[in-house]
Length: 115
Image 1 (tube, rainbow, N blue to C red):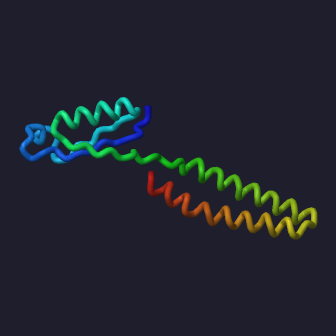
Image 2 (image 1 turned 90 degrees about the horizontal axis):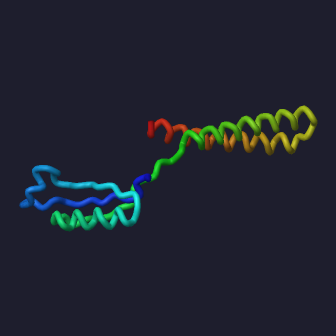
Image 3 (image 1 turned 60 degrees about the vertical axis):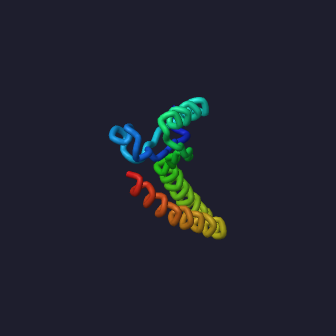
């Protein structure tokens, strides 16, 4: 089960848990019953819990492959339109190719940052 929430809290300075856990504790939870149990455990330890949503992973590789496929499909459409004499269709396909190509650059940048 993927982590849906993170429970964070600061350990009190006079607590014996501080030597074991440090100043801040972060505990993952995958379901709502598990979330309630973790909050209860932290409160029993004297820690005031704060629940935050866990960050979700963005599938940048899938997005990049989809954009690349769109660029290649627009290229094929533009070449086909040029060869058959449909100038307007060729311009529309070329515009789509440029827009998809421009969208590919920030996607690849995010993909590189996540790697």
